[in-house]
Image 1 (cartoon, helix red, strand yellow):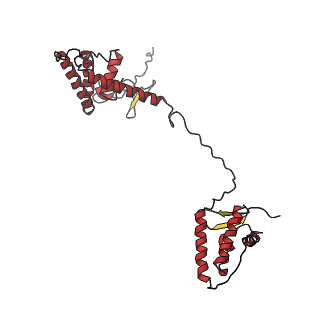
Image 2 (cartoon, one colour):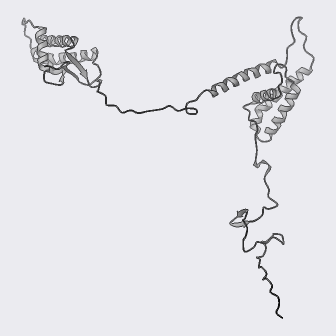
Length: 289
């Protein structure tokens, strides 16, 4: 009679050093590990998992200062801001200050100053009021605090209304569209001062070549107007200085300049300039037949 078949026993590796006797790691993993620790699978969470108390902090309310906290305590409990119950508000305020003092002493300093003010107001309310003249009400120790709270609440509401307005970059963006257009270049206009400077420069050069001759000569402005128009025909632009003849003397220069002014006045010519301080050019304002 043959012996019954028995399943071979699974060979398990020795337990890690320092682990309990029944903590062994199977050679074959047939279920999902919950995590890996230094590359080794972890099938169950350790019983001694330690999380420091200050590893996670949740702040349900964030305040911008002592007045903000005090206003929050008053409005949350529907207290009358003109008749603040100092004992209840001070007690709740000190609880919050104790919490933040344990975590941030520098932040708590500002809140401690307000706590001292609340305690002072409460102590003054416990004392008998000072005698006042008949017909006047005694001074309320809470009056200054109420004034500051009302002013702060007004500023806070105004800031909330401003923040509700649409802000550029937060609520909307400015649309920018670039359109390429072929525009006819528009030359800047020549000012009278620039004409004067050009005229002075021509006079200076005329004095260098002029001769001292005393003659009587009658010159016609109309004749020089026609002469300027003939010089401009068939040419797109003519430099301002080319229309003058310094060698003929200052008299001819004056008449030529007056002729140019008359032609510009009658819109027969255009005096243009490519850019500021650039040379001045003259051209016909019409197209000859």
